[in-house]
Image (cartoon, rainbow, N blue to C red; front, top):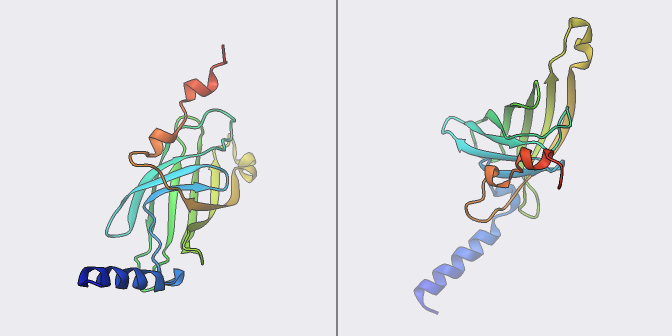
Length: 168
């Protein structure tokens, strides 16, 4: 066996010996949750701040959802590599609500990256008397979505005009 082949075999063996607990979970990329919503974290700063886009498949009004901006921060990675994070989504153009997510990034026994989150959604109400019904709470689990080269969230989102117009 030549020197190059030996190094390749050694590198593969070392990569396979790293267990899921030793793998780091990275927030950047495209994610899908258990409600079929999509989230793309595209900018992750050195200080832990990040931004991206969110396309929900669930709307309060039942109308066509559009891509909405998200901003957040993760705790600085230490030895463990499974960061906690928080982000907000300002639902644009189709809802008068904001959602705050908190969660942690994990790698399961099979090597799959998972974002386990809890959220609070605050919807605008018309009076203080209606305040009791303005906040909802829930849980979402996101898994990394693999895409072909060049596929980003805007390329995967439906056109609202196409969804809302009746078929001929």
